[in-house]
Length: 220
Image (cartoon, rainbow, N blue to C red; front, top):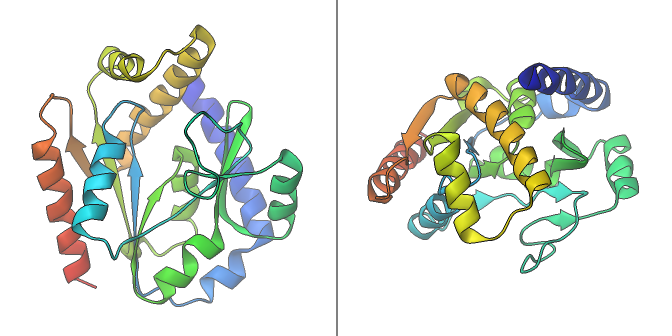
C-alpha cells in the first residue's frame, strides 16, 4: 500500500513535469552521464559517495532543494538549498526543477542548473535523489546516459540499528524512515547495479563502485 501511494504521487509529479518543461530538456544534447544513487538511511551511502569524490574529484555532485527544516550541522547551499514551500512553488511554476518529489510533509527537488549544463558538457554527474525522482528522470533523460545504483544495506533491523547508532531518532521520524525504506527496497529490482554493503566491511563496496564509475568514465 505504501509503494502504491508513492507511485500515485510519482504519476502526479510526472504529469506536472511534462506540462512544465519536457521540450527544453529534450532539445539539449546530452553527452555526459548521470549516476544516480538510491539507498536507505544507514546504508553507508554517504561514506561511499565521499570515497567516490576522493577518487574522482572531477565528478560533479548536485545540491538539492528541500522544504524541510535545516538540521544541526547542516550548511545551506552545501547539504541542501533550504527554501520555503512558497519558494519551492515558484521554482515549480518557473520550470526550474529537473525533478521533484514529496516524502512525508517535505518536498525535494533537483534544479536543472545543477545537472543539465554538466551533462551537456560531457561530464559525469552524481545524484542523490528520491525514488520518485528516479522514475521521473527515466522519462526525461536518455536511458543510455544514466546508471542507477542501489546500495544494499541488509534488512530493516540493520538499517535501523546503524541509524540509531549515529544519533537519537524519535518514533515518528523512525516510522517515516521505515516507510521510505519500504519504497526504496521495492525499487531495488529496477536498479542497474546493486552494490552489497550489508557487512561491516565497506572496502568491497568501495572497490565495486569505483570500478563501475571508472568504466562509465572510460566509455564517455
